[in-house]
Image (cartoon, rainbow, N blue to C red; front, side, top):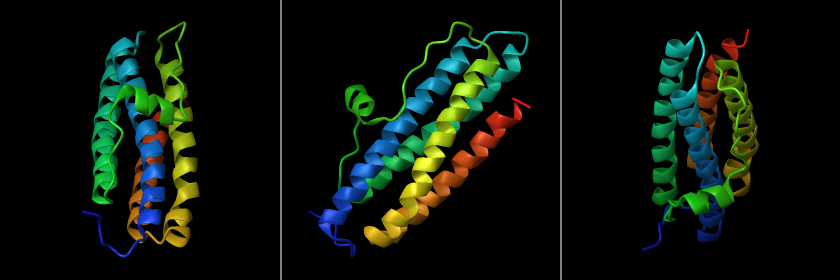
Length: 157
């Protein structure tokens, strides 16, 4: 049964398609943060290990939330690694050195890229696709990533 929530089926499909890309980016960012948590080395290992853990736990909650938003709009969330890798804007980077600064710099770049993507879609969702709920949701998501980026950026000063 199609949702009857005051948004055309065509617009719901467009919103879901964009959210699928956001979900893919969130998932790849989660995997990259897990990688940092597992593989960071150096004299600050313990503190960075715990820091990356707090970040990937937050990303895990975000992933679930984005997928549930897609489902609430009557669409299916991509759930295979293949489909997520086809949708993401991010690339996996292999480091020569698994130090905190390298991982943090890469993760910060991804968060900032995602923030820009989210910001660009806020008005599209609200004005073009007539979905104020998703616009509000994405605004909140953007604010969460801004805070996560701040936490990462603070390690580099």
